[in-house]
Length: 300
Image (cartoon, rainbow, N blue to C red; front, side, top):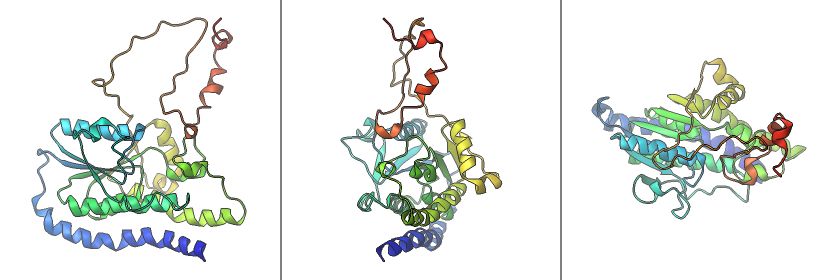
């Protein structure tokens, strides 16, 4: 019974949130702000919705994008379900960027399980907070978790969704860099695999539909764009094609390094990510096999 109960909750909770709450929210927004929309030439109120504002590539991209918008005169707020001030980027701690925490009461998982259910509820909680506390929001930038996109769009908020990688692939371990401890758990087999498939089905469908509801979809590379097309066949048929926006590098915060002279007897592989188990650093090693034999030999 507990398993059936959890499956029922997993099916009904996101659907109820998406179907009933936006009706009341949309009416309230229409009464409050539709008559006083800012002209396009005026500064915008932009709100970023990010699941965990820690230290990582996705977080760096959000902080950089928010900083640039703010530097250009726009008003910016980052809404997140987790913000540890001892482990975050300086801009989110020193007051440079305004940060609000919403949805932290929802756990990240239940005994190491139900990650996607908890992430969905936390994301929806952040979207509800945004709609209730930021009626003047002109555009929302949603990162990683897709369900809040549909909620915000139903409430009349333009949404830019940044897709780092389809969650349906990360959750099954079909891609390197599976996010979170869930990717390190053993994959179920037999009857448990069927239960897991039934549990994931509504969330995978929800991810595709909510991603397609965005005003604009961005991905971090042409490779991710190809994976996006292969993973979301419904969106592909509907002509939903994401735009590529490569992560930026702040030249003001990163000094230029001297370009090393080419070496004839060795080579160096540089990994631009955190060194941890889930990042899967094996891909560069097969690539090294295509280098000349002299380059593969270690220096004397």
